[in-house]
Amino acid sequence: MHAASRSMIDSPWFWAYLFTTTALIGLALIGPKFAARQSQIEREFQGRQRAAQNIQGQEPSGDLSTAEKTLISLRPLCFGLAAVTTVAWIVFYRTRMLTQVPLTPP
Image (cartoon, rainbow, N blue to C red; front, side):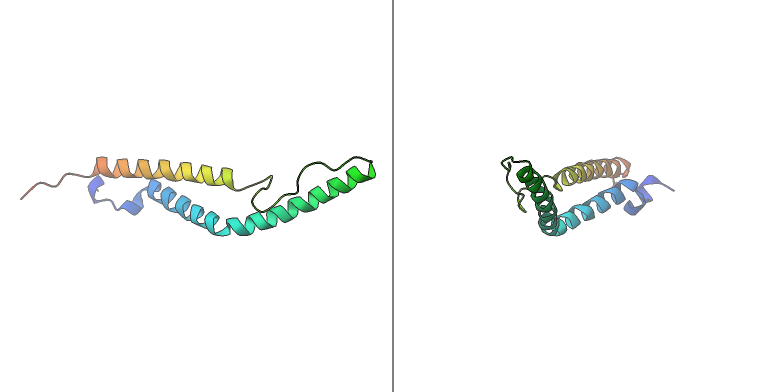
């Protein structure tokens, strides 16, 4: 089988690009819900910390988490997926362009 006659779905780089793009879209859709839930979990933890500080006679320090400002976010995952998506697309595009046979006029 010639490389030019191979379908683009035979490339593992196509699938890496497709799946990481889908993951980025999923992260964009679930991000607000995750942020709200994560901030709630962090506020519960911070409340327990503040209660322990009050028992020890210390003044509670630090601000409580909000949906916009959490200790744990999806940002590193988004950056990682964006990097893999970019690399997969570049490699897929280059391998497709290099393996295609130029068309000659009849």
